[in-house]
Length: 537
Ligand SMILES: Cc1cc2nc3c(=O)[nH]c(=O)nc-3n(C[C@H](O)[C@H](O)[C@H](O)COP(=O)(O)OP(=O)(O)OC[C@H]3O[C@@H](n4cnc5c(N)ncnc54)[C@H](O)[C@@H]3O)c2cc1C
Image 1: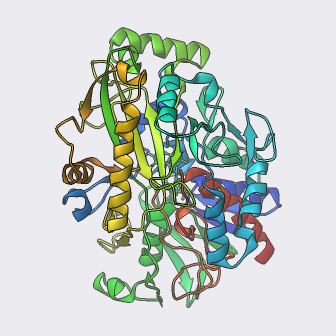
Image 2: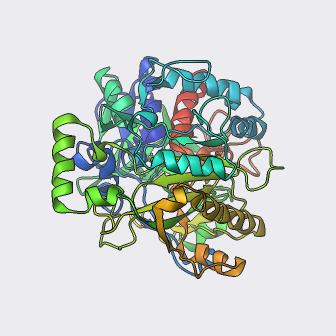
Image 3: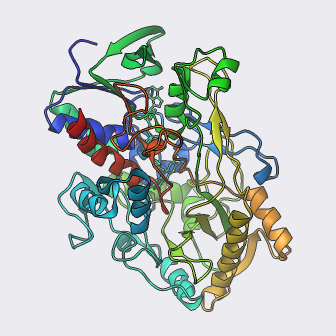
């Protein structure tokens, strides 16, 4: 592309778009190469269109993991956004920063207060435009609109929250506020009934400055290196290979693609690179290692009262909801799949919550080809209560399946592979049943459908979650940040250890997995990362 660029960013996802906007705001010239295409699609903009994007390979990398012993030998499906806005354009829009102590962990891993809780809190308050208004925890007037979950809550949310209280969980009005623990409604990245992705909140405003150039459908295939200095990238565009150069290259391709790109460029575990016939530039065993992700499971119930199933299943209900959405921007299609939830401890002695709870006022037991059937739920009234772990101790890793840059890498999830992860999951699923047993909520439940009343003892419950659980889409830490090159890939200024002119800024660089959903911390790493890059450029 024409022009001289200070920075070349690979990927326009949660971190990449924020980084582009921040660098441009500081007067820098930025080139963004994005493998996917436009986000101007109805099902991207419409919040409940989420289900339609889940398997759509036009906007989704649609990875599959290797068969996993932790899942009784099954492989899991791992969607990742492949379009402007990256995974923020296909995600479930829940806005959770994580626990304050997660950022203390980041500070400890990096040895730097710039990644600690006070720095994160200050940045989040600048990033946010909270519909609930500003206070000492929340920000207002920032680029990213955060809608309150309270105003659009489904009528079954309140009975569910009362059941949680009866089961011993406290109410919490703001999981991003003074404390994370408790139950309530989720804040969402939705603005005026439309998904508020980073493409909308950051990339488009950045493009308007004239300092950011964007090339869509540009799949970066390797980093160009002069010895141990990055000088640009090679990318595939319109059937041919092209090259682009900039003062610095910043990888923001996400937790799967960024380590893959490093490996394709000769930066990774030497033995594995040799097996693929790739010349090693830097033998770095931490590339693709430390893969950490949240694992979740749903319990599903047939109800005695109408749920969203009754609304969205019949054709006339869909037509009504569609009309309502198109005419007013509201109604059932303008909400997230997750209506409520919260955070709890499986053991009161724990210092911080280790489980996250989700409530969905519909059920989707019937499999449908190529769609997560949210827009066509079950034909009877149903709902789902789900949960996921916050800081699993199991670790997976990534490897190249082939030197072909367009081939998917091998993902070894290795989930539920420690006794601790299995034990806390077992305690957690028992709490779901305790919640469902609380009156008067219990009187609204006709029967438990999954796993069903026959699954009772510990072995059966464990086998059930090995059989039915899956990722909740938060892979992280595969090119993690740290002080020591022997156990990390980038330094606290996001520079790849041992390589000049190359940085990483996305969820792969998280030092540790955050206890909560990962869009907010990925946006944070873009925001704070820009500060580190500008300070050390
Ligand atoms: C289905 C789903 C639901 C989720 N729900 C939530 C939620 O409700 N709340 C929440 O907080 N988090 C959620 N997440 C997680 C969250 O969205 C991600 O953690 C976050 O967006 C990751 O940001 P990132 O910048 O690391 O990568 P991404 O946002 O994935 O961005 C990476 C970008 O790089 C591009 N790219 C990759 N490789 C190349 C290449 N070689 N050349 C050019 N471009 C490339 C990709 O196409 C993509 O646009 C969800 C994720 C998914 C997939």
